[in-house]
Length: 427
Ligand SMILES: *[C@@H]1O[C@H](CO)[C@@H](O)[C@H](O)[C@H]1NC(C)=O
Ligand SMILES: *[C@@H]1O[C@H](CO)[C@@H](O)[C@H](O)[C@H]1NC(C)=O
Ligand SMILES: *[C@@H]1O[C@H](CO)[C@@H](O)[C@H](O)[C@H]1NC(C)=O
Ligand SMILES: *[C@@H]1O[C@H](CO)[C@@H](O)[C@H](O)[C@H]1NC(C)=O
Ligand SMILES: *[C@@H]1O[C@H](CO)[C@@H](O)[C@H](O)[C@H]1NC(C)=O
View 1: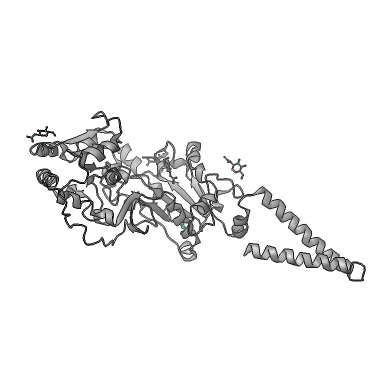
View 2: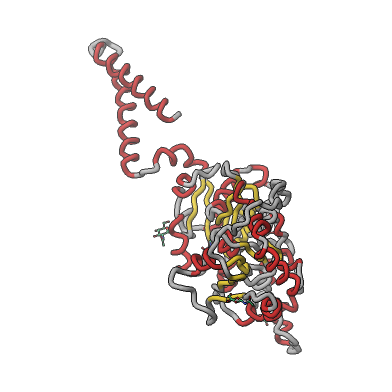
């Protein structure tokens, strides 16, 4: 549209200039000259501008209608992490459905006042920084949307401080029931459409069909289960009766090999290669039982020809192709060991775990998509103008007993209990 109107302007200009040339000496000349002169000077101005800004064409289209997003930061370190997305470019480059958004961590760009932003995103990590709560904004505009951004598991990161109640208008998390749903992984069909995570996904119906092949998919595999720990901590390791599972596996001459965190070291080719070449199964546990929390941990199996044994609080049928994984919680340790042994010794059954490859790909989700969705919401006039707030945010985020999580076990000190009730105290 813009190009067309510029061409038209040139055509007009050409006409006016020729007209002016021809009739310069007649009585009308003065008026015509004046018109031509103003048109020329305006075009000159515009060209000057477009030299300054690369994205001028886009800005020109939207400058009056840009939605401004501030990512709140309480220190400069965080401001730096976000700099890669600063501005509007990322929305254009990533081809978001709506591109008229501008992100920044600079609180001063809109008349030096953060109340002018359309949305302020609060990355939950700021609540774990010293003094994070004392650095929250002190003023807010009614029309502004405060957005909670949370990708850390709620069970190990409950938020205790009362300050978060009735504070956020929108949520942007890995939980299905968020205003902006942002999963860690995504399953696509072969056309490239995302089919999962989805609350009502219907998987292809032949995923359980055994193949006729007697050859194991990857013939070099000889070991049962691998687990590569990225996050260390004694708590994770002792959970879920892993000792019991190891014992049960031993009855079938099978092992669970743990890599990292002071256990085995990955061989030279790296952990991924070891999983791919040697292991039938991968123990996909990311240290949390939080609902809907399915992380990239499962990709260590999916991307390396191993079958994930999934552990966690999610309804995995909404996340992963049917018969592509084993749910740890459906078995006792003894039964699981027997089942693993059965599939390893029956290649047709084991190979069927890979039927999903005929229809799907499983990959890391696009991290920027959440920003695209936020931009879309800000453009949704109805949603933007509808009042919304999370009155009991703390129990929306974490369903369990906050007292158990927030107070040190067996607290009897009055000062600790009053501190819990005192909204100015940071937990
Ligand atoms: C923030 O924006 C202001 C202009 O509004 C600018 O003067 C300042 O340098 C910017 N700060 C940073 C850290 O980029
Ligand atoms: C949130 O904070 C974490 C930790 O500082 C950082 O790794 C992540 O990139 C941040 N995400 C967003 C969307 O700001
Ligand atoms: C147990 O497995 C190891 C290699 O994983 C093999 O060398 C050994 O012969 C097996 N023992 C039995 C009794 O199957
Ligand atoms: C956002 O939430 C706050 C606190 O509940 C409320 O005062 C404000 O009106 C809400 N704004 C919108 C636009 O929903
Ligand atoms: C709450 O905290 C403030 C500041 O730390 C303190 O002045 C006040 O006495 C506290 N109130 C209670 C009930 O602990």
